[in-house]
Length: 109
Image (cartoon, rainbow, N blue to C red):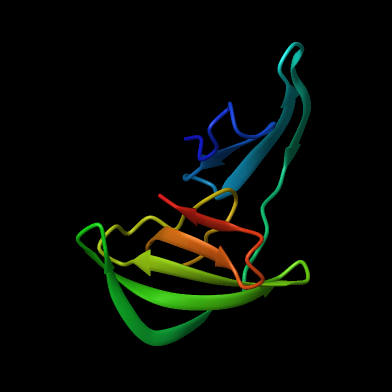
């Protein structure tokens, strides 16, 4: 499953939900895949009691520090897949929104 739109980014992420690994491909428009590696990071999420509705799903807020940045994720336990945007995951449900606290990243499913 790819979370990036090929026209927007040279990076493509493919998550294998059976073993939790993520294949990352860096490609150029003319030559196809030029770099492939496996990235399976672990996240130390802090669950908060905050909730909101996203696309009809009740979502819960979680925060973490990862590679020098602070992130906020909104996930729904109603979809019990521990995955999300790019290579983010590790929560007890699908991540529907992901925000970098400094505003550099803001994505929604």
